[in-house]
Image (cartoon, rainbow over all chains, first blue to last red; front, side, top):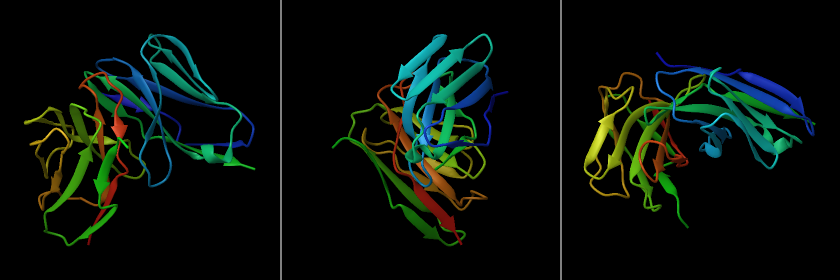
Length: 108
Length: 113
């Protein structure tokens, strides 16, 4: 079966760093996506990893280890607007399997 | 402006009625998808279409139907057979099926009374 796990909620202070972990067990793997979703809005694409290692994109970075079935999204220099849900999604045989999302709360 | 549109943003229907949610894209994407999002759960795939005039069932297709007569449009009908239709429905598209990044529309929140 397919299983994608991420923490339900994380709280951090403005200006700090937060790391959101995602572990997965899927029957096929062809890349891992991270999306950001504000309440009641569409998910927006943040990053894509298909090879092991770190991908950096401004304040956001994403890491993948295929052998460990593990990824993380790193948010640096947190801003209030980063308060949102962060979705981990695995491409399994051409279809995306989503985790339940991690709600990040940024406090002043 | 290129993008994906869904209408309406909020929709209310009485139990037992069919309802159709619209999804249009002008990105020239081949593939389109419908997901359902419920509180505390990940997005779940209802139907997807890799090309015009073709579509496939996703993980939770029961009680739903779709059509793909035009590349730009992928409407979803929620039928009375769907036992728990109240949810947030998201449409997405990607340039090609399979590996490409999916881009999402703004969603339709359906409430069945």
